[in-house]
Length: 270
Length: 127
Image 1 (cartoon, rainbow over the protein chains, first blue to last red):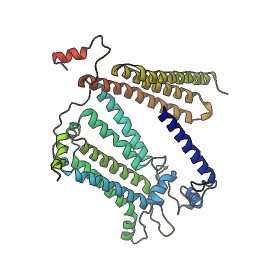
Image 2: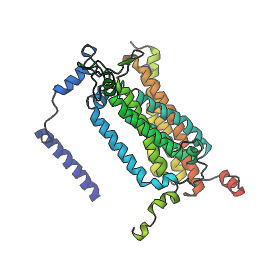
Image 3: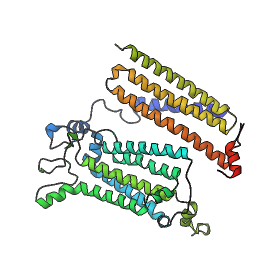
């Protein structure tokens, strides 16, 4: 009873303190009512065909900011993610080479059939999130995160040897991940390389044609906005994230005796 | 002016949402009050089918009858029906997996029981 009274009193005090601070402006300035200059230029230019030396050719301004205006920032984020997965793979490098000794038949047939239907649904949602990243909210990373739920559930429901039977090996996933990251990097410098080869001006992270450069990624495909680099970057990011997460999941869901080999000797302190 | 069909869709949809609220309430009370694992599993499934599948179908009907939403009502309605279908599949499969795993690992006493054919089959070595 005393606990409840203290809990409620604390909640009331926190609410009052927060509202007092907000009233005083103590949490910083209140958000301005008018749109700031940089936001106004994003809104005016992102899909403005009249100023097509400054536009990003994408109706979705967030993706345009993430992969075009602030593309370098997102590239470094991708590198950080790449490094994190790489660290996980390095710690468990011994596990990846050992054949797993789990022989499981998975869950019952009811769960397996349901999972088969749901896997299709998950992959459809993931693909639409990634491929429409330049049209609707979403993008490569979000699509990849959704898609990597499917292999995780498949391993749990069908058992780990499903991937062995379907020949989805560690090396193939690693190759897919590295290839998509390579293509991602290549598509950021493709116009620069093309410009150097043909003696024209091209830039790093160039999407559409600029005032000094006529080189450009296609802005439309079959009269649907394509967003130039945005579409390609989203697709490669999607593949890289999906394969990266799948790699880590397959490693971490190895059998106990295999994974414990990595921790051998810890009871002696070395 | 909304037609009779649209009014009917909205009213039936709202009735289904009300059923959903009732099922959620019943499920949460029985989750606390039921005596053991298998009866509580029943309460959980009442919550996920009666309290989630039924009201989402209701939302689909309400959206289909809401003329002021324009063409977007079909997007809302279709998305709700897909979600309801997935929910219907997953809720049943989830409870099944929980019950089966619990039965096999003997993590909870099988109560209340009238006949346990899974146990009989396992005794014969068939499962």
